[in-house]
Image 1 (cartoon, one colour):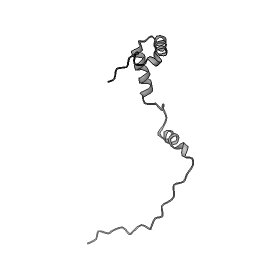
Image 2 (spheres, one colour):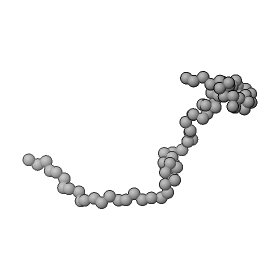
Image 3 (cartoon, helix red, strand yellow):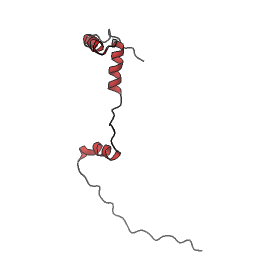
Image 4 (spheres, helix red, strand yellow):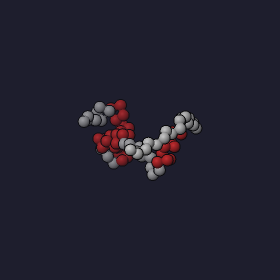
Length: 81
């Protein structure tokens, strides 16, 4: 696991110190909190499956799935001897 220090992040050290002070944390704990919030999986909330699927494919717009032509069903086998 990599160790992040304020020295290694000197380009943002002042902003990081201010943010940590606002939240009452050390710089190291603030870095952990930032990484945790960025890397945590996004929650969709309490939605049903149909709504989740609709949102996932909404950008594709309306489209029709073509019907596959079928042949008549073959006769069922008989098991008479």
